[in-house]
Length: 445
Image (cartoon, rainbow, N blue to C red; front, side):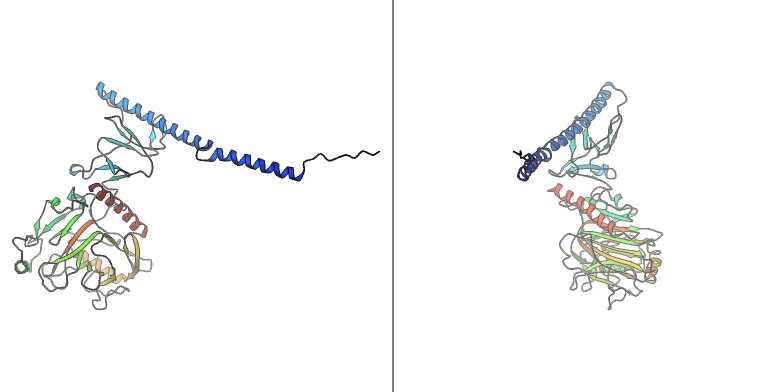
Protein backbone atom coordinates (compact mmCIF):
# COMPACT_ATOMS: atom_id res chain seq x y z
CA UNK A 1 0.00 0.00 0.00
CA UNK A 2 1.42 3.38 -0.96
CA UNK A 3 2.37 5.56 1.98
CA UNK A 4 1.20 9.16 1.81
CA UNK A 5 3.80 11.78 2.95
CA UNK A 6 2.34 14.82 4.79
CA UNK A 7 3.81 18.39 4.53
CA UNK A 8 5.04 19.32 7.96
CA UNK A 9 5.73 23.04 7.07
CA UNK A 10 4.19 26.02 8.92
CA UNK A 11 0.64 26.88 7.99
CA UNK A 12 -0.40 30.36 6.88
CA UNK A 13 -2.34 30.88 10.10
CA UNK A 14 0.67 29.92 12.19
CA UNK A 15 2.85 32.31 10.18
CA UNK A 16 0.49 35.21 10.76
CA UNK A 17 0.30 34.44 14.48
CA UNK A 18 4.08 34.24 14.69
CA UNK A 19 4.52 37.59 12.93
CA UNK A 20 1.95 39.25 15.19
CA UNK A 21 3.70 37.89 18.28
CA UNK A 22 7.07 39.12 16.97
CA UNK A 23 5.63 42.56 16.25
CA UNK A 24 4.17 42.75 19.75
CA UNK A 25 7.50 41.73 21.24
CA UNK A 26 9.31 44.26 19.03
CA UNK A 27 6.86 46.97 20.04
CA UNK A 28 7.29 46.18 23.70
CA UNK A 29 11.06 46.13 23.30
CA UNK A 30 11.04 49.40 21.33
CA UNK A 31 8.79 51.02 23.89
CA UNK A 32 11.12 49.92 26.65
CA UNK A 33 14.01 51.37 24.69
CA UNK A 34 12.61 54.75 23.59
CA UNK A 35 9.86 55.61 26.08
CA UNK A 36 10.28 58.39 28.59
CA UNK A 37 11.65 55.90 31.09
CA UNK A 38 13.15 53.65 28.45
CA UNK A 39 16.69 52.45 27.99
CA UNK A 40 17.64 55.19 25.50
CA UNK A 41 16.12 57.96 27.61
CA UNK A 42 17.84 56.66 30.71
CA UNK A 43 21.11 56.41 28.84
CA UNK A 44 20.71 59.96 27.51
CA UNK A 45 19.80 61.23 30.98
CA UNK A 46 22.77 59.40 32.50
CA UNK A 47 25.08 60.91 29.88
CA UNK A 48 23.76 64.41 30.64
CA UNK A 49 24.10 63.91 34.38
CA UNK A 50 27.64 62.63 33.93
CA UNK A 51 28.54 65.62 31.72
CA UNK A 52 27.07 68.08 34.22
CA UNK A 53 28.82 66.36 37.12
CA UNK A 54 32.09 66.35 35.17
CA UNK A 55 31.90 70.07 34.37
CA UNK A 56 30.83 70.89 37.92
CA UNK A 57 33.79 68.94 39.31
CA UNK A 58 36.16 70.89 37.05
CA UNK A 59 34.67 74.18 38.25
CA UNK A 60 34.87 73.10 41.90
CA UNK A 61 38.57 72.33 41.48
CA UNK A 62 39.13 75.71 39.84
CA UNK A 63 37.31 77.53 42.68
CA UNK A 64 39.37 75.65 45.25
CA UNK A 65 42.57 76.54 43.41
CA UNK A 66 41.65 80.25 43.27
CA UNK A 67 40.64 80.35 46.94
CA UNK A 68 43.79 78.47 48.03
CA UNK A 69 46.06 80.80 46.06
CA UNK A 70 44.31 83.79 47.63
CA UNK A 71 44.74 82.32 51.12
CA UNK A 72 48.41 81.53 50.54
CA UNK A 73 49.08 84.97 49.08
CA UNK A 74 50.17 83.54 45.76
CA UNK A 75 49.36 84.81 42.31
CA UNK A 76 45.73 83.80 41.93
CA UNK A 77 44.75 81.09 39.51
CA UNK A 78 42.73 82.32 36.56
CA UNK A 79 38.99 82.69 37.10
CA UNK A 80 36.97 81.13 34.34
CA UNK A 81 34.43 82.84 32.08
CA UNK A 82 33.64 86.55 32.08
CA UNK A 83 33.12 88.58 35.23
CA UNK A 84 29.59 89.93 35.69
CA UNK A 85 29.12 93.52 36.89
CA UNK A 86 26.19 95.11 38.74
CA UNK A 87 24.12 97.71 36.89
CA UNK A 88 24.60 101.02 38.70
CA UNK A 89 25.92 104.54 38.16
CA UNK A 90 29.58 103.59 38.63
CA UNK A 91 29.27 100.75 36.12
CA UNK A 92 27.18 102.60 33.55
CA UNK A 93 29.45 101.67 30.64
CA UNK A 94 30.56 98.19 31.78
CA UNK A 95 27.58 96.56 33.53
CA UNK A 96 26.89 92.94 32.61
CA UNK A 97 24.26 90.79 34.33
CA UNK A 98 22.53 87.41 34.15
CA UNK A 99 18.76 87.39 34.77
CA UNK A 100 17.11 84.10 35.66
CA UNK A 101 13.66 84.22 34.04
CA UNK A 102 11.38 82.21 36.33
CA UNK A 103 12.06 84.28 39.44
CA UNK A 104 13.56 87.33 37.68
CA UNK A 105 16.64 86.95 39.86
CA UNK A 106 19.69 88.99 38.87
CA UNK A 107 23.32 87.94 39.18
CA UNK A 108 26.03 90.58 38.83
CA UNK A 109 29.22 91.54 40.64
CA UNK A 110 30.89 88.56 42.32
CA UNK A 111 29.71 86.07 39.69
CA UNK A 112 31.43 84.74 36.58
CA UNK A 113 29.50 83.52 33.53
CA UNK A 114 30.60 80.58 31.39
CA UNK A 115 28.51 80.24 28.25
CA UNK A 116 28.02 76.85 26.65
CA UNK A 117 30.96 76.22 24.32
CA UNK A 118 33.59 77.73 26.64
CA UNK A 119 36.96 75.97 26.16
CA UNK A 120 38.44 74.73 29.44
CA UNK A 121 42.14 73.92 29.62
CA UNK A 122 42.89 70.18 29.80
CA UNK A 123 39.18 69.45 29.56
CA UNK A 124 37.58 70.64 26.37
CA UNK A 125 34.35 72.43 25.45
CA UNK A 126 31.54 72.89 27.96
CA UNK A 127 28.14 71.55 26.99
CA UNK A 128 26.19 73.66 29.50
CA UNK A 129 25.94 77.24 30.80
CA UNK A 130 27.26 78.09 34.26
CA UNK A 131 27.56 80.96 36.71
CA UNK A 132 30.18 80.69 39.44
CA UNK A 133 30.81 82.67 42.61
CA UNK A 134 34.49 82.43 43.55
CA UNK A 135 33.92 83.92 47.00
CA UNK A 136 31.08 81.68 48.22
CA UNK A 137 31.86 78.66 46.06
CA UNK A 138 28.34 78.60 44.58
CA UNK A 139 27.94 76.97 41.17
CA UNK A 140 24.68 77.22 39.21
CA UNK A 141 23.97 75.39 35.96
CA UNK A 142 21.65 77.28 33.57
CA UNK A 143 19.46 75.71 30.90
CA UNK A 144 19.58 77.46 27.52
CA UNK A 145 16.18 79.19 27.64
CA UNK A 146 16.04 79.80 31.39
CA UNK A 147 17.93 83.10 31.52
CA UNK A 148 18.97 86.29 29.72
CA UNK A 149 22.41 87.84 29.58
CA UNK A 150 22.06 91.64 29.46
CA UNK A 151 24.86 94.19 29.34
CA UNK A 152 25.25 97.89 28.63
CA UNK A 153 25.33 97.26 24.88
CA UNK A 154 23.25 94.10 24.40
CA UNK A 155 19.93 95.97 24.58
CA UNK A 156 20.56 97.12 21.04
CA UNK A 157 21.03 94.78 18.09
CA UNK A 158 22.56 97.29 15.65
CA UNK A 159 25.57 99.14 17.07
CA UNK A 160 26.84 102.66 16.61
CA UNK A 161 23.73 104.86 16.57
CA UNK A 162 24.32 108.56 16.24
CA UNK A 163 22.13 109.03 19.29
CA UNK A 164 20.82 106.49 21.79
CA UNK A 165 18.43 107.33 24.62
CA UNK A 166 17.65 103.95 26.15
CA UNK A 167 16.15 102.71 29.41
CA UNK A 168 19.20 100.44 29.73
CA UNK A 169 21.39 103.43 30.58
CA UNK A 170 19.27 106.57 30.74
CA UNK A 171 19.02 106.52 34.52
CA UNK A 172 22.71 105.84 34.91
CA UNK A 173 24.83 108.02 32.72
CA UNK A 174 24.04 110.81 30.26
CA UNK A 175 27.22 109.89 28.37
CA UNK A 176 25.41 106.83 27.03
CA UNK A 177 23.27 109.14 24.91
CA UNK A 178 26.14 109.99 22.60
CA UNK A 179 28.49 112.91 22.11
CA UNK A 180 27.51 116.51 22.90
CA UNK A 181 24.02 115.70 24.23
CA UNK A 182 22.51 118.17 26.69
CA UNK A 183 19.28 118.10 28.68
CA UNK A 184 17.38 121.40 28.71
CA UNK A 185 14.15 122.60 30.30
CA UNK A 186 12.28 125.87 30.74
CA UNK A 187 11.78 127.50 34.11
CA UNK A 188 8.11 127.15 35.03
CA UNK A 189 8.41 129.52 37.97
CA UNK A 190 10.05 132.36 36.10
CA UNK A 191 8.26 131.75 32.78
CA UNK A 192 4.99 130.25 33.93
CA UNK A 193 2.68 131.96 31.43
CA UNK A 194 2.49 132.13 27.66
CA UNK A 195 2.96 135.91 27.82
CA UNK A 196 6.18 135.59 29.78
CA UNK A 197 7.55 133.02 27.36
CA UNK A 198 6.57 135.13 24.35
CA UNK A 199 8.38 138.08 25.86
CA UNK A 200 11.47 135.94 26.44
CA UNK A 201 11.30 134.69 22.89
CA UNK A 202 11.24 138.26 21.52
CA UNK A 203 14.55 138.81 23.29
CA UNK A 204 16.00 135.78 21.51
CA UNK A 205 14.98 136.82 18.00
CA UNK A 206 17.80 137.40 15.58
CA UNK A 207 20.27 135.49 17.73
CA UNK A 208 21.81 132.07 17.50
CA UNK A 209 21.76 129.59 20.35
CA UNK A 210 25.56 129.32 20.14
CA UNK A 211 25.76 133.05 20.97
CA UNK A 212 22.68 133.25 23.16
CA UNK A 213 22.68 130.06 25.19
CA UNK A 214 20.06 131.23 27.67
CA UNK A 215 16.36 132.03 27.76
CA UNK A 216 13.18 130.53 29.11
CA UNK A 217 13.80 127.10 27.56
CA UNK A 218 17.61 126.94 27.66
CA UNK A 219 18.08 125.97 31.29
CA UNK A 220 20.59 123.12 31.54
CA UNK A 221 19.83 120.19 33.79
CA UNK A 222 22.43 117.73 35.06
CA UNK A 223 19.98 115.97 37.37
CA UNK A 224 18.73 113.23 35.08
CA UNK A 225 17.22 111.18 37.91
CA UNK A 226 14.34 113.62 38.42
CA UNK A 227 13.14 112.83 34.89
CA UNK A 228 13.30 109.04 35.22
CA UNK A 229 10.05 107.15 35.70
CA UNK A 230 10.45 104.82 38.68
CA UNK A 231 8.17 102.05 37.38
CA UNK A 232 9.62 101.70 33.89
CA UNK A 233 13.08 103.29 33.97
CA UNK A 234 11.93 105.49 31.07
CA UNK A 235 12.86 109.09 30.43
CA UNK A 236 9.88 111.32 31.20
CA UNK A 237 9.20 114.08 28.70
CA UNK A 238 7.04 116.27 30.89
CA UNK A 239 6.06 118.99 28.43
CA UNK A 240 8.86 121.44 29.19
CA UNK A 241 12.10 119.52 28.69
CA UNK A 242 14.06 118.25 25.71
CA UNK A 243 17.43 116.77 24.75
CA UNK A 244 19.71 118.49 22.28
CA UNK A 245 22.63 117.09 20.27
CA UNK A 246 25.15 119.62 18.99
CA UNK A 247 27.63 119.13 16.16
CA UNK A 248 29.51 122.19 14.95
CA UNK A 249 30.19 120.52 11.58
CA UNK A 250 26.59 119.55 10.88
CA UNK A 251 25.40 116.02 10.19
CA UNK A 252 25.92 113.47 7.43
CA UNK A 253 23.14 111.06 6.37
CA UNK A 254 24.62 110.09 3.01
CA UNK A 255 24.39 106.40 3.93
CA UNK A 256 20.75 106.76 4.93
CA UNK A 257 18.78 107.54 8.07
CA UNK A 258 16.82 105.56 10.64
CA UNK A 259 14.77 106.96 13.52
CA UNK A 260 13.34 104.76 16.29
CA UNK A 261 11.01 105.75 19.11
CA UNK A 262 9.69 103.34 21.73
CA UNK A 263 7.46 104.68 24.47
CA UNK A 264 4.04 105.87 25.57
CA UNK A 265 3.01 109.29 24.28
CA UNK A 266 0.37 111.11 26.34
CA UNK A 267 0.21 114.59 24.81
CA UNK A 268 1.96 117.80 23.88
CA UNK A 269 2.55 121.22 25.43
CA UNK A 270 2.64 124.36 23.30
CA UNK A 271 4.83 126.90 25.02
CA UNK A 272 4.42 130.17 23.16
CA UNK A 273 1.36 130.06 20.91
CA UNK A 274 -2.20 129.59 22.18
CA UNK A 275 -4.04 128.50 19.04
CA UNK A 276 -1.29 127.03 16.93
CA UNK A 277 -1.05 123.54 15.60
CA UNK A 278 0.59 121.42 18.29
CA UNK A 279 1.62 117.92 17.18
CA UNK A 280 3.81 115.67 19.32
CA UNK A 281 7.30 116.33 17.94
CA UNK A 282 9.60 113.36 18.52
CA UNK A 283 12.64 114.81 16.79
CA UNK A 284 13.57 118.00 14.98
CA UNK A 285 16.64 119.50 13.35
CA UNK A 286 17.28 123.22 13.01
CA UNK A 287 20.02 125.74 12.40
CA UNK A 288 19.76 127.46 15.78
CA UNK A 289 18.53 130.77 14.35
CA UNK A 290 15.57 132.02 16.38
CA UNK A 291 14.00 133.58 13.30
CA UNK A 292 13.51 130.17 11.70
CA UNK A 293 11.38 127.13 12.33
CA UNK A 294 12.75 123.62 12.71
CA UNK A 295 13.82 122.53 9.24
CA UNK A 296 13.26 118.80 9.72
CA UNK A 297 10.63 117.19 11.94
CA UNK A 298 9.20 113.79 12.86
CA UNK A 299 5.89 114.18 14.64
CA UNK A 300 2.49 112.67 15.43
CA UNK A 301 -0.61 114.80 14.92
CA UNK A 302 -3.21 114.20 17.61
CA UNK A 303 -5.75 116.86 16.69
CA UNK A 304 -8.13 114.97 14.37
CA UNK A 305 -6.17 113.06 11.76
CA UNK A 306 -4.07 110.71 13.95
CA UNK A 307 -1.26 110.58 11.45
CA UNK A 308 2.49 110.40 11.72
CA UNK A 309 4.11 113.05 9.59
CA UNK A 310 7.59 114.22 8.74
CA UNK A 311 9.46 116.48 6.40
CA UNK A 312 13.10 116.28 5.37
CA UNK A 313 13.16 119.92 4.26
CA UNK A 314 10.82 122.86 3.93
CA UNK A 315 11.13 123.51 0.22
CA UNK A 316 11.20 120.25 -1.73
CA UNK A 317 8.10 118.54 -3.07
CA UNK A 318 7.39 115.18 -1.47
CA UNK A 319 6.69 112.97 -4.47
CA UNK A 320 5.84 109.72 -2.70
CA UNK A 321 2.39 108.26 -2.07
CA UNK A 322 2.68 109.60 1.48
CA UNK A 323 2.83 113.21 0.25
CA UNK A 324 0.45 115.75 1.79
CA UNK A 325 -1.33 117.70 -0.96
CA UNK A 326 -2.00 120.59 1.42
CA UNK A 327 1.63 120.80 2.54
CA UNK A 328 3.70 119.37 -0.30
CA UNK A 329 6.90 119.20 1.76
CA UNK A 330 5.26 116.88 4.32
CA UNK A 331 4.94 113.10 4.22
CA UNK A 332 2.00 111.65 6.15
CA UNK A 333 1.04 108.15 7.22
CA UNK A 334 -2.04 107.29 9.27
CA UNK A 335 -1.39 105.33 12.49
CA UNK A 336 -4.39 104.65 14.69
CA UNK A 337 -4.31 103.64 18.36
CA UNK A 338 -0.96 105.28 18.97
CA UNK A 339 -1.52 107.48 22.03
CA UNK A 340 -1.39 106.35 25.67
CA UNK A 341 -0.13 102.84 24.92
CA UNK A 342 3.34 101.36 24.43
CA UNK A 343 4.38 101.71 20.78
CA UNK A 344 7.62 101.08 18.90
CA UNK A 345 7.90 103.28 15.79
CA UNK A 346 10.68 103.00 13.20
CA UNK A 347 11.19 104.90 9.97
CA UNK A 348 14.05 104.25 7.55
CA UNK A 349 15.57 105.89 4.46
CA UNK A 350 18.15 104.23 2.21
CA UNK A 351 19.30 104.37 -1.41
CA UNK A 352 17.77 102.08 -4.03
CA UNK A 353 19.51 100.80 -7.15
CA UNK A 354 16.92 102.76 -9.14
CA UNK A 355 18.41 106.01 -7.89
CA UNK A 356 15.44 106.79 -5.65
CA UNK A 357 15.41 106.68 -1.86
CA UNK A 358 13.40 103.90 -0.25
CA UNK A 359 11.45 104.88 2.85
CA UNK A 360 9.66 102.45 5.13
CA UNK A 361 7.65 102.74 8.31
CA UNK A 362 7.38 100.02 10.98
CA UNK A 363 5.18 99.66 14.03
CA UNK A 364 6.18 97.26 16.81
CA UNK A 365 8.82 95.71 14.58
CA UNK A 366 6.42 94.97 11.70
CA UNK A 367 6.50 96.71 8.33
CA UNK A 368 3.40 98.87 7.81
CA UNK A 369 4.20 100.28 4.41
CA UNK A 370 7.06 101.32 2.13
CA UNK A 371 7.45 103.76 -0.73
CA UNK A 372 10.17 106.02 -2.11
CA UNK A 373 11.12 109.64 -2.62
CA UNK A 374 13.20 111.17 -5.37
CA UNK A 375 16.95 111.36 -5.08
CA UNK A 376 16.73 115.13 -5.68
CA UNK A 377 14.51 115.55 -2.62
CA UNK A 378 16.90 113.55 -0.46
CA UNK A 379 19.93 115.39 -1.86
CA UNK A 380 18.35 118.67 -0.79
CA UNK A 381 18.01 117.19 2.68
CA UNK A 382 21.68 116.11 2.69
CA UNK A 383 22.84 119.60 1.77
CA UNK A 384 20.57 121.10 4.41
CA UNK A 385 21.84 118.97 7.30
CA UNK A 386 25.44 119.85 6.50
CA UNK A 387 24.64 123.29 7.88
CA UNK A 388 22.28 122.17 10.64
CA UNK A 389 24.12 121.91 13.94
CA UNK A 390 21.28 120.95 16.29
CA UNK A 391 19.17 117.80 16.61
CA UNK A 392 16.52 117.91 19.32
CA UNK A 393 14.49 115.14 20.88
CA UNK A 394 11.14 116.12 22.37
CA UNK A 395 10.91 119.65 20.96
CA UNK A 396 10.22 121.36 17.64
CA UNK A 397 8.56 124.41 16.11
CA UNK A 398 5.43 124.04 13.99
CA UNK A 399 3.49 126.57 11.88
CA UNK A 400 5.12 129.64 13.46
CA UNK A 401 8.70 130.42 14.41
CA UNK A 402 7.83 130.85 18.07
CA UNK A 403 5.45 127.90 18.36
CA UNK A 404 7.65 125.47 20.30
CA UNK A 405 5.91 122.18 20.97
CA UNK A 406 7.16 119.96 23.80
CA UNK A 407 6.52 116.23 23.95
CA UNK A 408 4.71 114.67 26.90
CA UNK A 409 5.06 110.98 27.71
CA UNK A 410 7.49 108.21 28.53
CA UNK A 411 10.41 107.37 26.27
CA UNK A 412 11.87 103.88 26.71
CA UNK A 413 14.12 104.19 23.69
CA UNK A 414 14.91 106.80 21.04
CA UNK A 415 17.64 106.23 18.48
CA UNK A 416 18.94 107.97 15.40
CA UNK A 417 21.24 106.22 12.92
CA UNK A 418 23.09 107.80 10.02
CA UNK A 419 22.33 104.70 7.95
CA UNK A 420 19.22 102.90 6.79
CA UNK A 421 18.47 99.73 8.74
CA UNK A 422 17.22 96.64 6.94
CA UNK A 423 13.94 94.93 7.77
CA UNK A 424 15.87 92.25 9.65
CA UNK A 425 17.84 94.85 11.64
CA UNK A 426 14.66 96.72 12.55
CA UNK A 427 13.12 93.48 13.82
CA UNK A 428 16.28 92.59 15.77
CA UNK A 429 16.39 96.00 17.45
CA UNK A 430 12.72 95.68 18.36
CA UNK A 431 13.17 92.24 19.92
CA UNK A 432 16.28 93.07 21.95
CA UNK A 433 14.98 96.43 23.13
CA UNK A 434 11.54 95.21 24.21
CA UNK A 435 13.03 92.14 25.92
CA UNK A 436 15.23 94.32 28.10
CA UNK A 437 12.40 96.78 28.77
CA UNK A 438 10.28 93.88 30.05
CA UNK A 439 13.07 92.94 32.44
CA UNK A 440 13.30 96.53 33.72
CA UNK A 441 9.54 96.69 34.36
CA UNK A 442 9.37 93.24 35.93
CA UNK A 443 12.37 94.03 38.13
CA UNK A 444 10.69 97.16 39.50
CA UNK A 445 7.41 95.45 40.45
